[in-house]
Image (tube, rainbow, N blue to C red; front, side, top):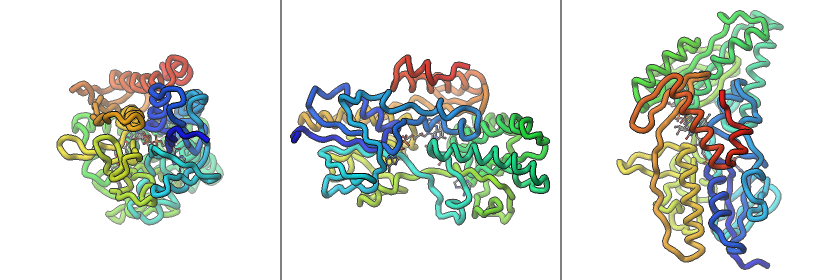
Length: 397
Ligand code: FAD
Ligand code: NAD
């Protein structure tokens, strides 16, 4: 039996893949056993999910087999669902077995946060995974088809997106781009379609640059999006949503982009969390467990001003690299490296040819920002899969 340390990585999203790739680069031959566990045999680009959700791009452009990203002679890939993390036993329970570890990297990503809003779990659809966006896309198309069988049901043509954070804004932009195509395909008068974006905060994209927010809202209004800002969704029903003002919006489609929380498995493992996120140390380790690293949407870190970093792919990737270095350093008994986030800015798509960006200390909008968004996407593809992945999955137009 092998006596070399066992490293188990849970989740092959942004944080998990970067950790795995970096480990396979840094570890010497036979220095450790590395196992990567993920519930699918593919890695998906969460940052791209709003497009297949609306039907403006394909599922295939949004995922890649994990076997194409790692060297399976160096890393064992286990396709399974993690069911329980047993910290005291140094074991992970999967749906079809258990794994022991010496070092654990938890990179299981976030889950939709429902804030206890009644009906949300039953009647609203989150944008979270390939499976969830397949459902949204099919559901939207089905509503157009159903409407043609009973034209009195105009609520079939009402679409509510709950939350105007970055996910909500990016999705609603794609949906607005898709509506004309769907109207044509299903012989529907575009004037009958309503796309609502409801936001509880006093502004869309709370906390983002106000000039860019205004620009984004202008672009989206011109595409036909109707904003309801400063009013929360209070309840979701089989017929639509009820707002805090008491107003009801009848809609057969409600997409929830109202926020995320950390994975519930982490609370169940006994860690103290804030909305499912664990406050980790400067080296990305869980409190009191020097062999457990937590990264990405499951981790909570603070910027020098004491505010939590928002959970993004950008920080998850950077943490993945440092995490791998620190796991290797731990094995070798060397000094660990502090994680320092390098903020490259924010770029948000507003549909075809439109975006907003705040990067390099400057603001960008329109076509230039859209090119920046493509550059960010390409850079990611290049980072994890080199030129072959850029050529296969990149969007050049
Ligand atoms: P994830 O990337 O979510 O990966 C988690 C992995 O764990 C997944 O592969 C999942 O299948 C797997 N997993 C989960 N549970 C289990 C289980 N029980 N068993 C086995 N496997 C499991 N951030 C940006 O920086 N820029 C953007 O442009 C951007 N756009 C976004 C657009 C949308 C629509 C959304 C929803 C998010 C966006 N984000 C963006 C945020 C970003 O996607 C997340 O912060 C990032 O994915 C977090 O990475 P992660 O590694 O923590 O988790
Ligand atoms: P979020 O938490 O950033 O935004 C959710 C929005 O929903 C908030 O504005 C909130 O006020 C609103 N909301 C909450 N409850 C509501 C209610 N009851 N009714 C109406 N509105 C309600 O969540 P997100 O947009 O999914 O983003 C998650 C993370 O992913 C963030 O860190 C974000 O920065 C990141 N992200 C980044 C990009 C990008 O950089 N392009 C794109 C998508 C997501």
